[in-house]
Length: 353
Image (tube, rainbow, N blue to C red; front, side, top):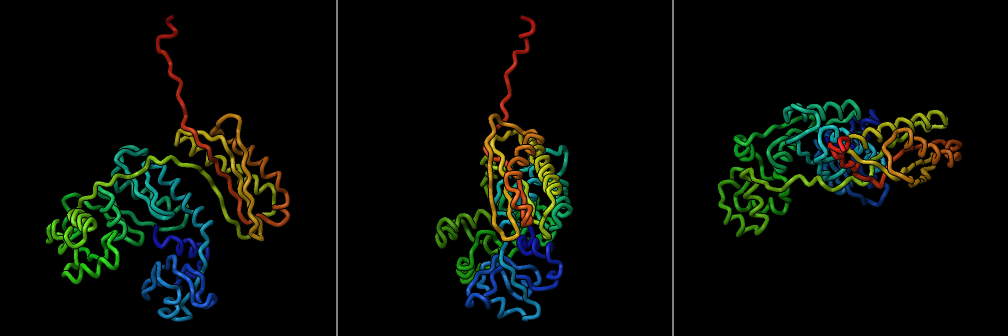
């Protein structure tokens, strides 16, 4: 995703799109303290970036251009879940790195005879259509090159790196662009006269190991387009859910129930595509004072039926009538205790006996 947290806030606050938006607590209100989570591309033009002390933004950006917003991780997690569901339409071989980044193995995919670029375009366009957010992707034969391509393409771009193009592509990159090479290592590399991928390629593997130990070997391999690390996708998903934040708040019971029905249908579809069932339904609700309650109900038998999920969520919702009186700020449904569907073995010849 492109400047994910900042992009979510600009979507929800269009008036900030031309401002230098920094996701951090305003240091002027916190004795100069605070660290920047991320910043939009306007702020980046002023030299403001992630992990920087927030006070640096005050020093670098004109006051009339600068906007601070504290991070809203609940909202970002909700949007991230939307994005991940779109990715799961293409493949289940997904290694999530963070809320806004993932590696996908699309060697085999759910959509059929599509090229890598067609798959990437499908996800990129659907994410934009359903969330209003842009993303970039890199496609190649290993994770390192895919990551390099994704960063090279930002914002809202794409990069395909073929095996025969990898060495030349890497040779053109400044060492600051190499994923995994930190600022301290960059300083040492530059002192050694190594400023680009081409400079790294010119050094022997032994030379880099002698100077940087294990990291030297990694840099030697990466500069030559080699990365053998797999997409680690086989960690089973612990939950599937849908939630939404409301502004203005929801006061009508029928609207809330309609939302729960829609969530339940979406979740049932995901369970079907994942070939799993659930034994636990979870309702999450928050009022206008940001008081949040989570209620769960264990089922006697596992299910992936939309109506059954909805009915359980509805029952949990009706146990909390006070939230409608105050106004619902957030409403969500999720399912946990996921179980892989078990198939019954059948003897093809049993009917002949």
